[in-house]
Length: 196
Image (cartoon, rainbow, N blue to C red; front, side, top):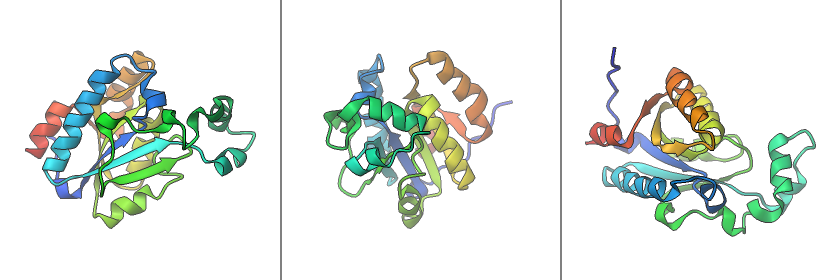
């Protein structure tokens, strides 16, 4: 049985482009195609009056100092040296999918988009109740954000062709078996029809 997808009200919707930054994009084969699709989707959402948000992982000096010894993510960031410092080119948004004035922009120091940011408040202030998620990686920021957004009562859509994981089998498993429990998994082509 095919699920009937709910209508998307663009004015109450935000596309979140998560971790599309140089140091992460470099790990993905086909990043140029992904960026091109992301740029088209950002333009589509904007043209319908939707909101666009950008999330990046980047550490300030105080963030490095505050990492507890029990943090696996913190240990990875610390071992990467200054590669994930907020001033590093590796944490910069790619210009093909970069914020414009008026967009939501947050910097996080954990995997998910919500826990160390004011993202929820920025979305609520704009009247957003529906999220379109695009991010790298599927098993990292996308998984964490799907779960958190669902718990915060957002209507969640995962754009399967704007997410990716270093392990394609993990991406496939999450988008087919896990995400549908808390979100709707669609493609950018389907999004075009839901907005249009």
